[in-house]
Image 1 (cartoon, rainbow, N blue to C red):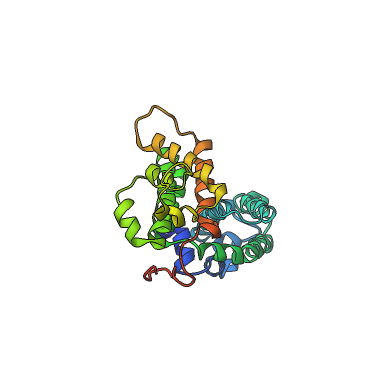
Image 2: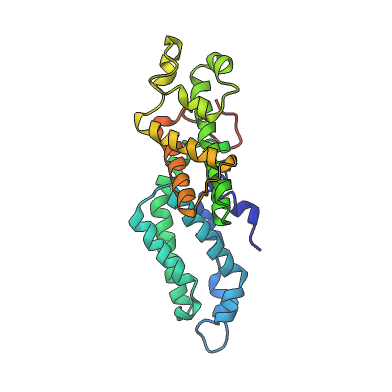
Length: 268
């Protein structure tokens, strides 16, 4: 039976529990003995394949994994190849026997191992709270809840902004920004706002390339959480998700000290 709770928090799970390559090994172990491949006459029993829990677990977990790594911006050639393999695994009538099934699993396994170092490196820069909010945004997107997806994606960005400021100057954060909205937090990085010299060090924290991105994210946050009459389309929601990931994953926008982001530990 598929653990839906774990599946829906895959980013956080990969960060804190184990690499997906280990999970994939567990999912595929002993597949030669699964009933879709042991019926008389050889080949693949398609009806059995479509209902077998082991097969369904592989399809569900790998599908979710590919969604996550697409937002994590890994090697696109390899990602497209893995997506093609998943399509083949989803069509039992095109799989001759277990040897072909195993060959598809091997291709998927090779892809996972190829991109895993990149994923591990990127997730080391993301706090648990950010992972949880991005996980929720991805789940909302998959369930066609596009307004909620935008709200959750941008909330991860807001958390990162708070941490950028707070970790640079705790006293200044508490006195000036503890009750600020996202829009107000963004203003501190505007060259025409907060000109007092006490904000100078804070202003330097934001990479120049992200300033327009933050303004755009805030605009769609307003559309998503307030009754403005604006429709959040699938295209917009997916774009906002990509932009939120781009900001949170940027090493230049990471305020956390090395080793401080161990899952379940105290952020320092």
